[in-house]
Length: 483
Length: 38
Image (tube, rainbow over all chains, first blue to last red; front, side, top):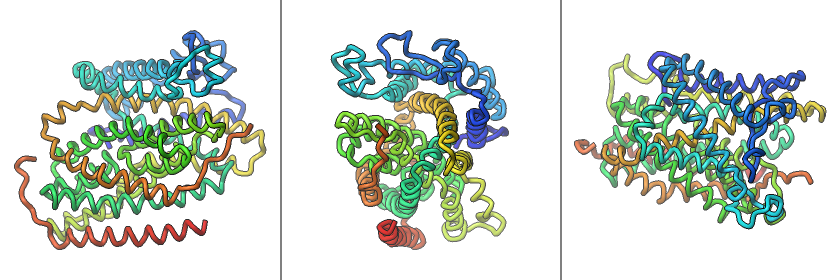
């Protein structure tokens, strides 16, 4: 969890930015279409037809106008956010400009018909004879690849835009917005939503009590890691690569370099998982969509990559099922991945407190005034979850049992907010790639840590995650799309 | 990392690993039965 020296944390900033977009989007309920100018991209063969404002009320802007308006609005909001973080504003504004345009160009490229089209009917409509069938969300992978190219082959450029390379800020903002989107789905399918939330409890048990214990044992016993390295590594691999590794490092008073190395390693492996697991899920779990979603949330260990993997798995699986004539409602697979990951994140603060208690009382016994304090639970709590729960609950309460006309307005409002969520997603993919400098990490002697990760990830994290997902989500299907 | 000290597993660490795994497996079994009822 990145945090500037004296400013607001990225965690809180993501809540404020997410809530700002959410509240403005809800203006539709009062008849004010405040965000209808945000740009959206359709599958295209003629570039001039690719871009459009999300609302017809702003069609006069045109696609290019909507794109520029979206860039300017985000630049203003994000630079104001950077001021709250006490970041270097000039460097942030320049860096954000690069991040936004490269990310969005990757998204536009990913919507090209030969990449995105999934059905024979659409191939005929666009007049093409082949397609990679990645759906337009293949643009996420293009953004990631663009980021990896920048991070590994243009380190000077990566360093220049570093101030705006903040994947945690972008994904957490996206997750706050995702809450409202899932809220409207839960309001229309309350029984299924309740079932998913209940089954999500399994993720907490698995991550904290099973994964952590096994990874810690493997790191200590088989690889000879000291406690200072083994505990953050176990948290990083089991719970969350960035937040949990850093919280655990703080809890056991490890040197700052330890969680940073662990977090860097987990980010790299999350990228590798992101490139592989959604395709594996589509190949083997296309007919168990919710198992696939839960698996992404359980096996991929950064917030960004886990939710992103859920998004790619969803697009691939929906396309596979659509080709077989089964059309599921969009959002449930992604929602399951996000729910599972968020459930895991909720307990980071409590787990850090438990470890701090054990370490200060039984392992490195400290003086009474230096022992773990209960306030550390709140300090370590990932605050963006508050934003996610708030948007979810507000939409659920307003939409549950509402008149169809009101539900339609909320759905349209969340559609506009969701367009911003997609843009934050794209920037997450690009910046995760930029941060993943493989050569630098190898030079820092990360090989032994990586060995533990490979053994744990491929030895049991992926497989145990798959079994648990199957046991708890097997046979649970998303609702079918109307018509 | 190369100068890492050798630290054998302490009894409290063994207890932490054992209790975590035990509690995790028991809770998972309980949850499996609970979800069958939903």
